[in-house]
Amino acid sequence: MAEAAWMVRSDGGALFERFKKGAVAVGWSDIGDLGAVRTREEIRKLFERTYPDDLPGRATNAISVLYKIRSAIGVDDSVITYDPD
Image (cartoon, rainbow, N blue to C red; front, side, top):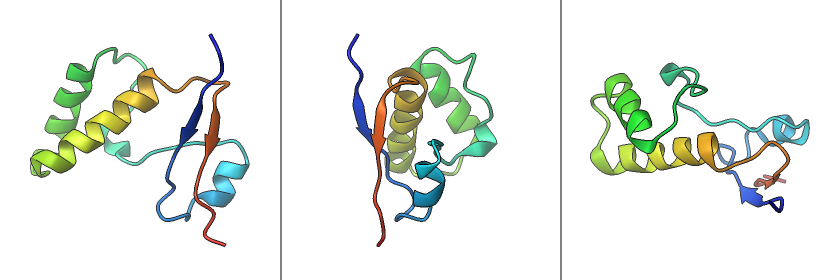
């Protein structure tokens, strides 16, 4: 399988220096480790349990991002992000 490239926005560039060191992260840390999660539905349940008051559109967007981070982005994939400078 060929290496993929991804755009990961880093909170308006605030995480740019950390990303340069090889880390890629997203928010929603209260959900916890997604290592055992396999499906979008499992992520949806975790998200809704953790953030029950989130607006439906915002929740759908967050769930999609979490699913991509968990299931689509690979260890050797390239990642680009916004540089505020």
